[in-house]
Image 1: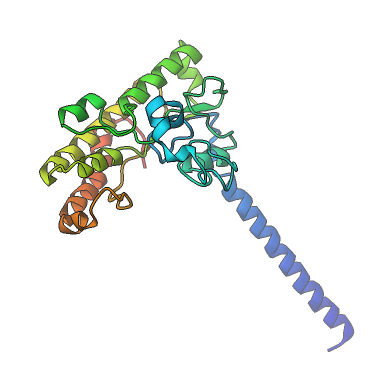
Image 2 (image 1 turned 90 degrees about the vertical axis):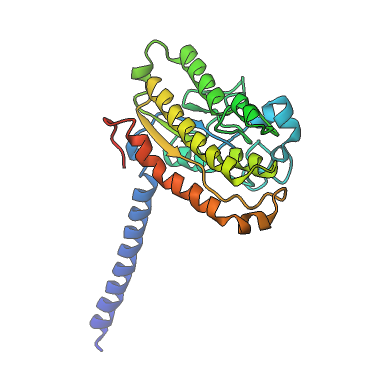
Length: 275
Protein backbone atom coordinates (compact mmCIF):
# COMPACT_ATOMS: atom_id res chain seq x y z
CA UNK A 1 0.00 0.00 0.00
CA UNK A 2 1.42 3.37 -0.96
CA UNK A 3 2.27 5.83 1.80
CA UNK A 4 -0.38 8.45 0.83
CA UNK A 5 -3.04 5.75 0.80
CA UNK A 6 -2.11 4.62 4.33
CA UNK A 7 -2.21 8.20 5.53
CA UNK A 8 -5.65 8.74 4.01
CA UNK A 9 -6.91 5.52 5.59
CA UNK A 10 -5.62 6.55 9.02
CA UNK A 11 -7.18 10.00 8.67
CA UNK A 12 -10.48 8.41 7.64
CA UNK A 13 -10.48 6.16 10.72
CA UNK A 14 -9.64 9.09 13.01
CA UNK A 15 -12.40 11.21 11.47
CA UNK A 16 -14.93 8.38 11.81
CA UNK A 17 -14.10 7.78 15.48
CA UNK A 18 -14.19 11.52 16.18
CA UNK A 19 -17.57 11.87 14.46
CA UNK A 20 -18.99 8.92 16.40
CA UNK A 21 -17.91 10.55 19.66
CA UNK A 22 -19.54 13.83 18.64
CA UNK A 23 -22.77 12.05 17.68
CA UNK A 24 -22.78 10.14 20.97
CA UNK A 25 -22.20 13.33 22.96
CA UNK A 26 -24.95 15.20 21.09
CA UNK A 27 -27.31 12.28 21.66
CA UNK A 28 -26.49 12.28 25.36
CA UNK A 29 -27.03 16.04 25.60
CA UNK A 30 -30.36 15.70 23.79
CA UNK A 31 -31.50 13.04 26.24
CA UNK A 32 -30.42 15.10 29.23
CA UNK A 33 -32.31 18.11 27.95
CA UNK A 34 -35.54 16.19 27.46
CA UNK A 35 -37.26 17.62 30.54
CA UNK A 36 -35.53 20.96 30.12
CA UNK A 37 -37.42 21.34 26.86
CA UNK A 38 -40.62 21.41 28.94
CA UNK A 39 -39.31 24.53 30.69
CA UNK A 40 -40.86 23.78 34.06
CA UNK A 41 -40.08 26.51 36.57
CA UNK A 42 -41.58 24.78 39.61
CA UNK A 43 -42.27 21.21 40.74
CA UNK A 44 -44.69 20.10 43.46
CA UNK A 45 -44.74 16.57 44.89
CA UNK A 46 -47.36 14.65 46.88
CA UNK A 47 -46.70 11.12 48.11
CA UNK A 48 -45.01 8.79 50.59
CA UNK A 49 -41.48 7.51 51.31
CA UNK A 50 -40.78 7.03 47.60
CA UNK A 51 -40.77 10.84 47.30
CA UNK A 52 -40.24 12.28 50.81
CA UNK A 53 -37.18 14.54 50.92
CA UNK A 54 -37.39 15.34 54.64
CA UNK A 55 -40.94 15.92 55.91
CA UNK A 56 -41.28 12.78 58.03
CA UNK A 57 -38.15 13.49 60.07
CA UNK A 58 -39.58 16.93 60.90
CA UNK A 59 -42.72 15.40 62.41
CA UNK A 60 -42.48 14.47 66.09
CA UNK A 61 -43.65 10.86 66.04
CA UNK A 62 -42.69 9.98 62.47
CA UNK A 63 -39.26 11.53 62.87
CA UNK A 64 -38.48 9.76 66.13
CA UNK A 65 -39.36 6.36 64.64
CA UNK A 66 -37.92 6.78 61.15
CA UNK A 67 -34.77 4.86 60.30
CA UNK A 68 -34.36 7.20 57.31
CA UNK A 69 -33.06 9.85 59.71
CA UNK A 70 -30.08 7.66 60.55
CA UNK A 71 -26.98 6.41 58.77
CA UNK A 72 -26.42 4.77 56.29
CA UNK A 73 -29.33 6.59 54.60
CA UNK A 74 -28.00 9.42 52.44
CA UNK A 75 -24.45 8.13 52.58
CA UNK A 76 -23.77 7.98 48.82
CA UNK A 77 -24.84 11.45 47.68
CA UNK A 78 -25.37 13.80 50.60
CA UNK A 79 -22.95 11.91 52.89
CA UNK A 80 -25.47 12.28 55.71
CA UNK A 81 -29.14 11.43 56.37
CA UNK A 82 -31.58 13.97 54.91
CA UNK A 83 -34.85 12.14 55.53
CA UNK A 84 -34.79 10.44 52.13
CA UNK A 85 -35.43 6.71 52.42
CA UNK A 86 -32.52 6.05 50.09
CA UNK A 87 -28.74 5.91 50.22
CA UNK A 88 -28.71 8.47 47.39
CA UNK A 89 -31.26 10.36 45.33
CA UNK A 90 -34.98 9.72 44.84
CA UNK A 91 -36.95 9.71 41.60
CA UNK A 92 -38.20 13.25 42.30
CA UNK A 93 -34.57 14.38 42.72
CA UNK A 94 -33.66 13.08 39.27
CA UNK A 95 -36.75 14.72 37.77
CA UNK A 96 -35.77 18.06 39.29
CA UNK A 97 -32.16 17.79 38.09
CA UNK A 98 -33.20 16.75 34.58
CA UNK A 99 -35.55 19.75 34.53
CA UNK A 100 -32.67 22.07 35.36
CA UNK A 101 -34.14 22.89 38.78
CA UNK A 102 -32.72 22.56 42.30
CA UNK A 103 -33.72 19.63 44.51
CA UNK A 104 -37.12 20.15 46.13
CA UNK A 105 -37.10 21.20 49.77
CA UNK A 106 -39.51 19.52 52.19
CA UNK A 107 -42.55 21.65 53.01
CA UNK A 108 -41.95 21.26 56.75
CA UNK A 109 -38.53 22.88 56.53
CA UNK A 110 -39.65 26.37 57.54
CA UNK A 111 -36.32 27.93 56.62
CA UNK A 112 -36.29 26.49 53.09
CA UNK A 113 -36.55 28.29 49.77
CA UNK A 114 -39.66 27.31 47.80
CA UNK A 115 -39.06 29.47 44.76
CA UNK A 116 -38.91 26.43 42.48
CA UNK A 117 -41.57 24.30 44.15
CA UNK A 118 -42.10 22.24 47.28
CA UNK A 119 -42.25 18.62 48.38
CA UNK A 120 -45.28 17.66 50.49
CA UNK A 121 -44.66 13.88 50.51
CA UNK A 122 -44.29 12.13 53.87
CA UNK A 123 -42.76 8.71 54.46
CA UNK A 124 -45.39 6.30 55.76
CA UNK A 125 -48.27 8.42 54.44
CA UNK A 126 -51.48 6.80 53.25
CA UNK A 127 -53.87 7.75 50.49
CA UNK A 128 -56.84 7.34 52.83
CA UNK A 129 -57.23 9.78 55.71
CA UNK A 130 -56.51 8.85 59.31
CA UNK A 131 -60.23 9.10 60.03
CA UNK A 132 -61.13 6.64 57.27
CA UNK A 133 -58.39 4.24 58.35
CA UNK A 134 -59.66 4.41 61.94
CA UNK A 135 -63.18 3.62 60.75
CA UNK A 136 -61.73 0.56 59.02
CA UNK A 137 -59.99 -0.34 62.29
CA UNK A 138 -56.53 0.09 60.80
CA UNK A 139 -53.96 1.80 63.01
CA UNK A 140 -51.47 4.16 61.34
CA UNK A 141 -47.95 3.44 62.53
CA UNK A 142 -45.99 6.58 61.70
CA UNK A 143 -47.92 9.60 60.43
CA UNK A 144 -51.38 11.05 59.89
CA UNK A 145 -50.17 13.17 56.97
CA UNK A 146 -52.29 11.43 54.35
CA UNK A 147 -53.02 12.65 50.84
CA UNK A 148 -55.81 14.99 51.98
CA UNK A 149 -53.50 16.57 54.57
CA UNK A 150 -50.82 17.11 51.94
CA UNK A 151 -53.39 18.70 49.65
CA UNK A 152 -54.35 21.07 52.48
CA UNK A 153 -50.68 21.98 52.89
CA UNK A 154 -50.41 22.66 49.19
CA UNK A 155 -53.52 24.83 49.20
CA UNK A 156 -52.22 26.86 52.16
CA UNK A 157 -48.83 27.17 50.49
CA UNK A 158 -50.40 28.64 47.36
CA UNK A 159 -52.51 31.07 49.38
CA UNK A 160 -49.35 32.59 50.81
CA UNK A 161 -47.10 32.37 47.75
CA UNK A 162 -49.16 33.00 44.62
CA UNK A 163 -52.76 33.98 45.43
CA UNK A 164 -54.62 35.56 43.66
CA UNK A 165 -52.40 35.04 40.60
CA UNK A 166 -51.91 31.26 40.94
CA UNK A 167 -53.22 30.42 37.44
CA UNK A 168 -50.51 32.63 35.96
CA UNK A 169 -47.70 31.70 38.33
CA UNK A 170 -48.35 27.95 38.14
CA UNK A 171 -48.79 27.63 34.38
CA UNK A 172 -45.26 26.25 33.94
CA UNK A 173 -45.35 24.00 37.00
CA UNK A 174 -45.16 20.21 37.15
CA UNK A 175 -47.21 18.36 39.77
CA UNK A 176 -46.59 14.76 40.81
CA UNK A 177 -49.31 12.87 42.70
CA UNK A 178 -47.82 9.72 44.22
CA UNK A 179 -46.51 7.11 44.55
CA UNK A 180 -49.12 6.74 47.32
CA UNK A 181 -51.56 4.05 48.46
CA UNK A 182 -49.15 1.20 49.11
CA UNK A 183 -48.92 1.96 52.83
CA UNK A 184 -52.68 1.62 53.19
CA UNK A 185 -52.41 -1.98 52.03
CA UNK A 186 -49.28 -2.69 54.10
CA UNK A 187 -50.94 -1.47 57.30
CA UNK A 188 -54.02 -3.56 56.53
CA UNK A 189 -52.00 -6.68 55.78
CA UNK A 190 -49.84 -6.36 58.88
CA UNK A 191 -52.96 -5.98 61.05
CA UNK A 192 -54.67 -9.11 59.75
CA UNK A 193 -57.34 -7.71 57.44
CA UNK A 194 -59.19 -10.19 55.25
CA UNK A 195 -58.90 -10.34 51.48
CA UNK A 196 -62.40 -8.91 51.10
CA UNK A 197 -61.53 -5.99 53.38
CA UNK A 198 -58.36 -5.34 51.38
CA UNK A 199 -60.28 -5.52 48.10
CA UNK A 200 -62.62 -2.78 49.30
CA UNK A 201 -59.57 -0.85 50.48
CA UNK A 202 -58.11 -0.84 46.96
CA UNK A 203 -61.34 0.60 45.57
CA UNK A 204 -61.33 3.35 48.20
CA UNK A 205 -57.67 4.16 47.50
CA UNK A 206 -58.30 4.59 43.79
CA UNK A 207 -61.26 6.89 44.45
CA UNK A 208 -59.21 8.93 46.93
CA UNK A 209 -56.38 9.46 44.46
CA UNK A 210 -58.86 10.52 41.76
CA UNK A 211 -60.32 13.01 44.24
CA UNK A 212 -56.81 14.29 44.96
CA UNK A 213 -56.21 14.89 41.27
CA UNK A 214 -59.51 16.77 41.03
CA UNK A 215 -58.51 18.99 43.95
CA UNK A 216 -55.17 19.66 42.25
CA UNK A 217 -56.93 20.74 39.07
CA UNK A 218 -59.12 23.07 41.12
CA UNK A 219 -55.93 24.64 42.49
CA UNK A 220 -55.08 25.75 38.95
CA UNK A 221 -52.74 22.85 38.20
CA UNK A 222 -51.90 22.52 34.50
CA UNK A 223 -49.52 19.55 34.26
CA UNK A 224 -49.93 16.47 36.45
CA UNK A 225 -48.06 13.17 36.56
CA UNK A 226 -49.89 10.47 38.54
CA UNK A 227 -47.83 7.65 40.04
CA UNK A 228 -50.39 5.40 41.73
CA UNK A 229 -49.53 2.59 44.12
CA UNK A 230 -47.83 -0.61 43.06
CA UNK A 231 -48.02 -4.01 44.73
CA UNK A 232 -46.86 -6.33 46.16
CA UNK A 233 -44.52 -4.83 48.73
CA UNK A 234 -42.92 -8.02 50.01
CA UNK A 235 -39.91 -6.49 51.74
CA UNK A 236 -41.75 -5.85 55.01
CA UNK A 237 -40.72 -8.45 57.59
CA UNK A 238 -43.95 -7.88 59.56
CA UNK A 239 -45.89 -9.71 56.85
CA UNK A 240 -45.68 -13.47 56.46
CA UNK A 241 -44.42 -14.37 53.00
CA UNK A 242 -46.80 -17.35 52.92
CA UNK A 243 -49.62 -14.84 53.09
CA UNK A 244 -48.63 -13.56 49.67
CA UNK A 245 -48.30 -17.01 48.13
CA UNK A 246 -51.64 -18.23 49.45
CA UNK A 247 -53.48 -15.10 48.36
CA UNK A 248 -51.86 -14.34 45.04
CA UNK A 249 -55.24 -13.49 43.55
CA UNK A 250 -55.35 -10.32 45.66
CA UNK A 251 -52.23 -8.96 43.98
CA UNK A 252 -53.74 -9.80 40.61
CA UNK A 253 -56.83 -7.86 41.64
CA UNK A 254 -54.75 -4.93 42.89
CA UNK A 255 -52.73 -4.80 39.69
CA UNK A 256 -55.91 -4.99 37.61
CA UNK A 257 -57.36 -2.08 39.58
CA UNK A 258 -54.15 -0.14 38.97
CA UNK A 259 -54.33 -0.75 35.22
CA UNK A 260 -57.98 0.31 35.20
CA UNK A 261 -57.15 3.45 37.18
CA UNK A 262 -56.20 5.72 34.23
CA UNK A 263 -59.47 4.96 32.42
CA UNK A 264 -61.49 5.87 35.50
CA UNK A 265 -59.38 8.96 36.06
CA UNK A 266 -59.62 10.41 32.56
CA UNK A 267 -63.37 9.81 32.47
CA UNK A 268 -63.52 12.47 35.19
CA UNK A 269 -61.55 14.89 32.99
CA UNK A 270 -62.94 14.61 29.44
CA UNK A 271 -61.19 17.83 28.34
CA UNK A 272 -57.76 16.87 29.68
CA UNK A 273 -54.91 15.96 27.34
CA UNK A 274 -53.27 12.71 28.44
CA UNK A 275 -50.98 9.98 27.22
